[in-house]
Image (cartoon, rainbow, N blue to C red; front, top):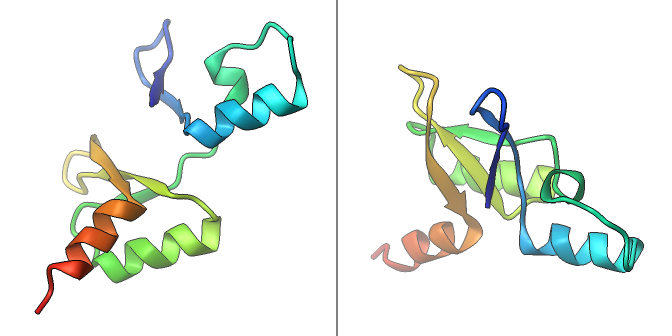
Length: 93
């Protein structure tokens, strides 16, 4: 899930289902919003980078999703998941 700043309309974080579970386990019953439960550090990959590079970034940063950035515009194009990479490698001859 992408989190957008209500004031700026820009990306401020990405929340994963593990983030929500971790927040629930740590602060059971607390009034917590999505931004407080998510990672604020967003790991990105350029749209033109190899999938091997993307997989390496995931392992090094212990994440399962990367924000895909268009290098020409600097804008987000999508989110690449570990399952996306596995499916791509699974289709290789």
